[in-house]
Amino acid sequence: MKRDYEYIVLGLGGFGSAAVYWLSKRAGADVMGLEQFELGHVRGESQDHSRIIRLSYHTPSYVELAKHAYRAWTHLENDAGEQVILKTGGLDLAPRVSAIPLSDHSGSMEAAGVNYEVLDAAEIMRRWPPFQLGEDVHGLYQAESGIAMAARANAAHQRVAREHGATLRDRCPVDSIRPLNGEIEIVAGGVEYRCRRLVITAGSWSNRALAPFGVQLPLTVTQEQVTYFVPPRPRDFQPGRFPIWIWLDQPCFYGVPTFGEQGPKVGQHHGGRVVTADTRTFEPDQAALGRVQQFLGRYIPSALGPIIYTKSCLYTLTPDRDFVIDAVAGYPTALVAIGGGHGYKFASLIGRTLSELAVDGRTESDIEPFRIARPTLQLANGPTNQ
Ligand SMILES: Cc1cc2nc3c(=O)[nH]c(=O)nc-3n(C[C@H](O)[C@H](O)[C@H](O)COP(=O)(O)OP(=O)(O)OC[C@H]3O[C@@H](n4cnc5c(N)ncnc54)[C@H](O)[C@@H]3O)c2cc1C
Image 1: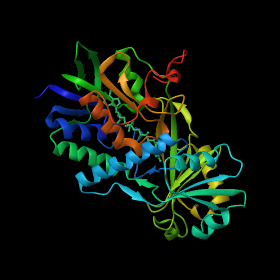
Image 2 (image 1 turned 90 degrees about the horizontal axis):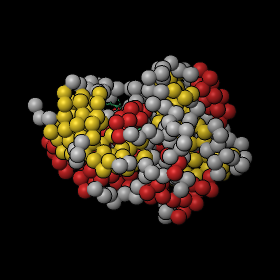
Image 3 (image 1 turned 60 degrees about the vertical axis):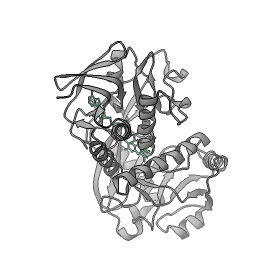
């Protein structure tokens, strides 16, 4: 059994699956990915039918990053011979006086040369009759927005990585990590391996994987949830008839047209309680569900119907909500990526970026905002979650 690899990826969720795919294009059989649970498990952050992808963002640099993200997904689609992005168009909605001004998004798209439309409530309701909005609500429409088919894309990354010769082992937790001179020794599933570069994509378990490097980040893990509903007129919520949407206020809600289930999906962004990967439950939070139902009752009443299910999921948040994509401080042999509550749309791009850092020691992507040494990650009171 091969025990020496150039590249080992720890954690095969959204980012790790992308990392093994992009690494395998450069290094084939010299790549191994290790996952503590079964591939496609639901204890992490990346496993659902859909995640929102959009160019509309609050800063021009995220808009630019999102442009690159679409290109990375297209690359995967061509390699895998299957579709993983479904463009439905996307609506940012908000009261004219809101906690998150729409002008941040329109200004960012303007600066990045992205086309969008400004719509008033009447026009939104004319195009998408399920919305019931007062005149105080306005919106931005961007046609490229849509669905990243998360579960399918993770499987595609994994499948093509294997076709390129990579070894992926699931039910194989990494139990110990030891940085050596120029390489890293790890023990996983009772077997000792060595690699020249270790890529850590451990989501809510990141601080555990970083501990052997003497690094702990001020991460907060929250338990979030989404709910699928069966609307009385399912046709109104089919992709092509209904967009992805985000309500940009406090609280912030979002929704996805019917995809993977018999009706649309709705959630509250960052409405969950603080947990750890060990203390989280899989029980629906009834209060959070109530807030979603109340919101729908007011603004999209015809989306309400019998609940198919509510599914929980974790956010791993940095204090500034920006990602971490960098070498582990003091250890150029180890790389880490952490995505927070909005990372999936960038998964393939982040995998490519990690592969460039691992193979070339540099990347085409602008990772300056995501450096591990940035001041917000050096908080004196240490991590919230282990
Ligand atoms: C409800 C919800 C909705 C979201 N909506 C969106 C959205 O619409 N758009 C968007 O862009 N983003 C969205 N996100 C955020 C996005 O899903 C995450 O940023 C992204 O999936 C993070 O992926 P990851 O690979 O870092 O984490 P994970 O998918 O959790 O992967 C980490 C993996 O590492 C494994 N692991 C950890 N430790 C070890 C070990 N010691 N040994 C072996 N394996 C290990 C874990 O088992 C896990 O499989 C949402 C998140 C949630 C929870």
